[in-house]
Amino acid sequence: MSPVSPEPLTLQAIAAMCEGSPFIRFAGIHALEVDAPAQRSIWRMPWRAEFERAQGSGQWQGGPIAALIDTAGCMGLIAVTGKPAGTVDFRTDYLRPATGAHLTAVAIVRRAGRTMGVVDVDVLDPQDRLVAAGRGTFFIEQAR
Image 1 (tube, rainbow, N blue to C red):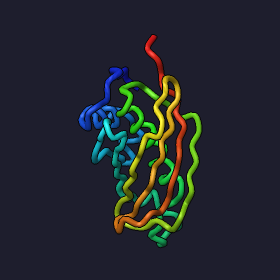
Image 2 (cartoon, rainbow, N blue to C red; image 1 turned 180 degrees about the vertical axis):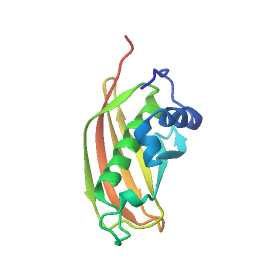
Image 3 (spheres, one colour; image 1 turned 135 degrees about the vertical axis):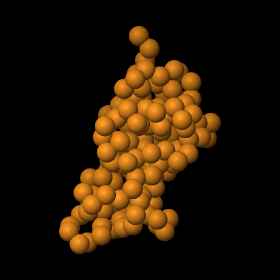
Image 4 (tube, rainbow, N blue to C red; image 1 turned 90 degrees about the vertical axis):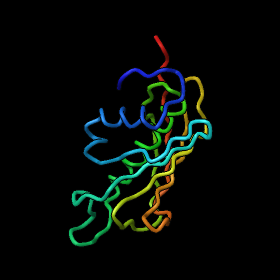
């Protein structure tokens, strides 16, 4: 991950960082909104045939949903702190089958300390139904 300044980042800066990640680019995950003062960001991931749980089901497989939670949480923390971060731990609760052309993740930074951050992420289907919820713990890199 490229170095970032210790200031909150704009939507454009976060978009550029995401574009630099082959996985995030493949998954199509992108930020729709970054509100660093509110410690909130909104992310979207479009449907891909590779994300289908079982052929013909039209349901999202759990792995891409977890990846969306991890990415939205980590990048949401980076947007708030302006510092590189990485996943220490995260959990995902699947609440209903996810279907639709995209999923939206709302990430809220609950704590951004000196070395660790905690972010809650809700995942919504196109009808704004809650399909999954997650929480991530991330380390925050310090300047050397």
